[in-house]
Structure formats: C-alpha cells, structure tokens
Image (cartoon, rainbow, N blue to C red; front, side):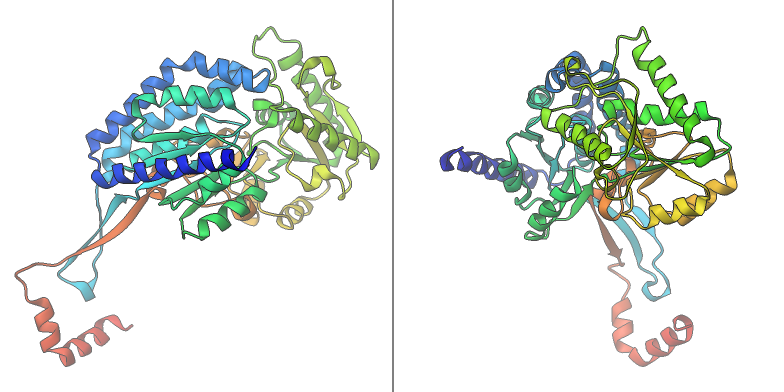
Length: 471
C-alpha cells in the first residue's frame, strides 16, 4: 500500500469525526423520544437483516453456525436494545443526592449528560454484538458513534453498513487495516471503547492518552475453570463444552484452562470427549462447529499443539485435525503440562483445552492469583462454602457458577475486566453511565441570602461548622 493510499482513510476519518461532532453540537441533548426512535429503528433493521448476518459471517469464517451467530451476535444485541428501551426514561432522570448540613438549605442532584462522539473499536470474533452492544448504550446516552470494524470480517462489515443505513447520521462505520485503526484511536473522541487483545490495547491506551480520551478496555486473558470433587461430572462438562464450543472457543470469556481434582482427571477427559462427540459429531443438528476465522489463527492453534507435544504434553483429541475439514478444529484436551508451554502462557482463543490437576483447592487459588487477573472465572461445584471461598479469594472480571460464558448475556449487570483483562465496564445501566457525564448540580434559592449570611457571620459559621461537622 503506497503513501497516498495510507492518507485517504485518515482524511475521511477526520471528516467523519468532525461531521459527527458538528451534528452532536447542533443537538447536544437528544430527547427521550428521539433516542427511543433511534433504538427502535436499529432493532427493526437488525431483525430484518437476520439472514444477511448469518450469510455474511459464514463467508467470513468459511463456516459459522447460525446458532453461534444467533446466540452470540443477534440476540444479545436485540436484548440489549430492548433493555435500554424499557429502562431509558428512568436512566435519564436526574438522581437526587443528600446535600448535608454544610450546604443546607440547597439541594444536590446528578444529571446525566451525553458525552458527544464515542469511538468503538470492534474485533472479528463477534462483529455485530461487539460493535452494536456499546453503540446501543452510547445512543441511549444521547451520543453519536463511530465504529471501527475488523479487516478480517469484510462481509460482516458490509452487512453492518446496511443495518445502520437509516441512522447513518448517528452511526458511522469505518473499515481498514492496522494503520486505519491507529488513526482511529488517535481521534479526540469523548470516549473510546476497545475490545481486543491486551497487546493492542496498550497501543490504543497510549494513543488515547494523547487526547486524554476516557477509555474502556474489554480484553481477555486466560479464564480458568475449577471442577470441584463433588460436582456431577456431566453437569460440569456440559457447562465447559457450551463455553468452549460457542464460536469454537474464539470468545474472550471462553474457558481457557481447567483445574480438575487428580482423582477425577481421567473421568473429566472421557466425559468431555464422549459428550462433545454426542453433541457435535453424532448429532442430527444442522448447526455444527464453527471454523477458525483465518488461516493465521488456524496455524496459531496448530502451533500451540506442536509446541506442547514437543515439550512432553499428552493430547486427547475429540477428533484429529483434518485438512479436508476446512479450518475446523475440534477440541484438543492437553495434559502433562509444563510452565514453558505456549498454551499456559498465552490466551488460547480457540478449541484447545489444557487440563491441570490439583489435590488441594488452595493450590488452585495460589495459581490463579499469581497470574494476571482473568476476564472470567468458572466454578463447577455444589459446595456453597467452597464457592464463597473462591469468590472472596480470587479476582476476575466476572464469575459464573455451574455455567460458562453466559453471564455476558445478563442485561442488568456490568461486564468488564480487571487489570490485564480490561478497564472499566459496560452493559445495561452501567453502559449508560459509562457513556454519560454524571454532572453534579447544586441548586440554591435565588431569594434566600445564604451566602450573605455566611460572609457576614464568618466567625459564627466557623463555630457552628466545627461543632456539628468536625467529629
């Protein structure tokens, strides 16, 4: 790509940004009705384009199951819109706060004001939900939105353009490779949300810092699963399979590795292979396992396995990797693990599952706490005391108990990471707050000479404040 071609998208980016900025300045406080109209139009267009979404994602992935696209892209977005529509009037209301004796008789309230133009940087794994999820909350908060889509999902990007056509004065879709992404993150947004890898997030954060742009980072990391000695293994395995099979594990909250009691390790492996085979290989379901998105990602996963084998790991494949299967990689369970293996150091983001064994739960807690804090933690246990111990003694962005990945679909709860797995959160009311400025308003009467009294009687005011407040 020559220099002239590099310059073009950046010129358009600035034009689009300042166009959105000007549009916002004309209407900096959209009414409740205006916001509802936008959300309803977006929902209607999304539903009308359902088949286009399925088709686009199948083309981008080589094969992506419609089940994965429905439960991971379409439904969460529609549910998020419905939740915002239902609650928006309440969210927009100023909240009353306690003024306290020092400010008596004035009143204090907090007003929620749109920020302006919000930037959304979207990865390839869930291009619709991770583009429109934040956009919905930003629109609900009264903002304009620019979305930078991944270069690895060109068909999904075009489908998204079609979806937002009717509200293109409020949402702009941007495409391009890494240079465009860098230029995008350098724009002076009023808030920027990035979903992707920790490595890229560091560059985005540095770029945003130049403009002091408020930032939300939704990253990933190695999310552990803990199997308790007393859990029904079928229940535990099914929960892990669900989280590991959606999008072939190409999801930031996919179970990255599993801790199993030593006495039950072989039971876990055999149960996993048997039940996965039943659900995905011997099933009459038309929805089969999604492919790995690109050859680069496919080769990366194969490289993990080769590295592990070379260093002494034992592989238990649900099915061997076959070149005539396209880029489909059925789960590969890995044991005999060593610390220097890549699958224990890097986020897997695919259908490989390291299996670690333990004797005492304290070993597990120590292992997790010595590593960067994960985006999710999964606990498979009927033991309330154990669950409480793990909740209190480990850190993670979120937790699911006897389930995996599905906590992301909770509309009325925040979603976000901690440390290497992210910064800030969104979804639901928290998303509205993230994309709003909570502005404190102190209201004093225009007829009561309060300030005159304070200024005139400073000695008396000093004594009263010390007596009643300095305690």
